[in-house]
Image (cartoon, rainbow, N blue to C red; front, side, top):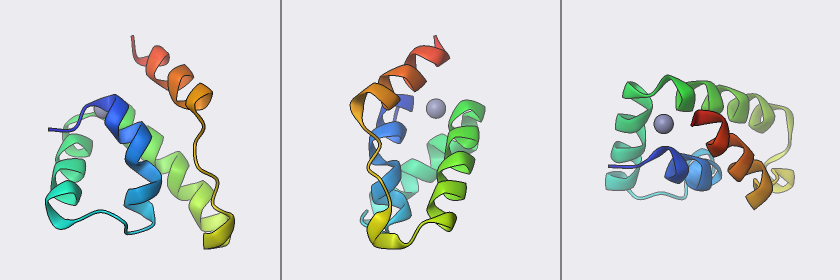
Length: 72
Ligand SMILES: [Zn+2]
């Protein structure tokens, strides 16, 4: 099972289609039970849609840390 932190770290892989099937399933499973991550992924989707693929920024550690702290 993915944890919130994993969702933060793997979001760009997920959106870029760079996950295998079992990872995608676990990712979706976590999203289905976690509102915080649903909201996070909505923001990621917005970013993703407005930027060309090759310019999609990797979330840096400070962004992820800030986001994970917000959950606590
Ligand atoms: Zn979560």
